[in-house]
Image (cartoon, rainbow, N blue to C red):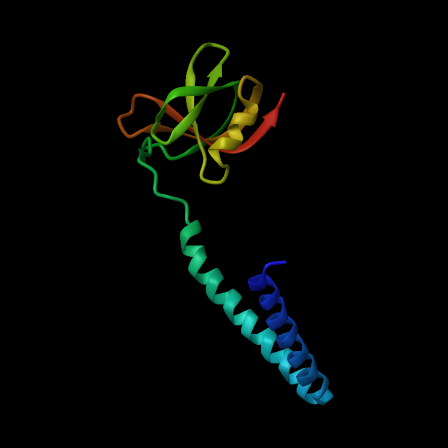
Length: 147
């Protein structure tokens, strides 16, 4: 074993032995206070990190306009296909039996997850909307049912 690694293990062993001696010398009351202090400290760290990281989990604002009549929940059946070039943050589309295409997008489902269903016939439930230019329809996926 190289000298650097063995010296590192020696230091770790020494630190462990010292910590064990110190905790063995603690009274039950002191040990309870120490464990409580650690629990409170880790709880505080978790709450702070959760608060900070929750701001990153907000769904991004989309660049789609509402069609004026409000959002309508629909259920569409078709084959999931991959777009050759991503359009408006959509990597997949649903090709219905009549040949029409609906871009698929979701704030709750990762788009790479839709790749599992590529080529398969599925029923997708979600909210139907149009792109900001009004040329294509977008289905915001909420639920996928495999046929």
